[in-house]
Length: 518
Image (cartoon, rainbow, N blue to C red; front, side, top):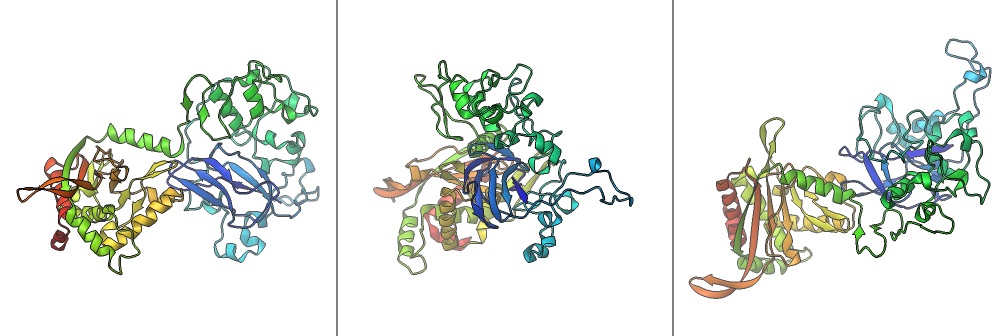
């Protein structure tokens, strides 16, 4: 029985994801919950487990391809035979016999669609559809919740040139998905897997090209046969697919055809220096340029920062603090048994100071709700920590940070940073923040003017902690100093409130003993 796993809704309204890498290959035997593929959404990289056990029949999306939620990405066989089609003697609902021509195409048995029907105890305890399939009530089962009902969400239209639209069997409403095609339609399709992703003209559908014979370029009125990743590559290189001859089975255009411009000798070919699918796209040699597609985390970050910068009126204030007492306290705590195995950094002290100072200035832990014309004050601090990762800047959250001790904050920061750098931060940890700290000091930077995260009213930049000349009791001395920069939304936070909050944070770092008075 062929079972198709569709890209699930991984949460937070994300409608698409990019295939980063497959962890299985065609012919591999997989088990339930085995990792199949790693994808990247606009939030983070996510690993998808298998909802089925069996043998991998086909990978329906290539690495580097951007796939919409609900689109099939892999086909798995459970080793069972397909059920026979209904015969002439099949009873209809009205009690009569339906003619053979009117019998519906054979579909998956109830055991394949409903694990409980197959005697699966785990599925019987949690009845319903498998991941990516519509279940009772019309909702799609997902990894982190339930997505919208099928057909209730209108996705944004994709931009594509009129001469080479992204027309695929998976996105064309008039054509059923590969796992739902009736036997008659399946018999007319060539066996090549590449043709499951492209709509082909009738004349080529019934007359596949002989092996080793290249097809002629597509006629002006027809749609070139190419998979979505190949179409994307053609757009990036400026190649018109109508002028390319397909060397694949049935005339399907391959990546190599696009790179060579359809010419067997490669004369006049368009050069592509980019490596594998999904890698950076490099301009032809000699231009001195390197072009990288804007997608994933970088695309989401750019959109959020532009929205914030031109929506919230930013104000930034600066404060230089003598943090020598904080460093001395850190050294003493490191020598104790409780903090011996914890990485106690200046960032942990800053996080604790922010949580304490926010009690006196709740405006910094609030949000401007423009639609409701209200200011929302949050009871708990959902503390975001900006983290630089190989995929770009992300801001995972420490939940209810005001409830944590200094040691607990230090431990949470260590776990958060390690998870972010490995690219395993779950999407749920990247949303719902109320205040952010960005530690630019780890790069040796003294200060900066941070931009607010959308939905928040304040962000603190922690500069480098270093020795500098400082006046102490009228005498010049060498002290450990640090610069703080606070940006805030002037719609929510007044100048007096922002200044008081920044002064409170600075005072707590300059004299940690003040924490006893808060």
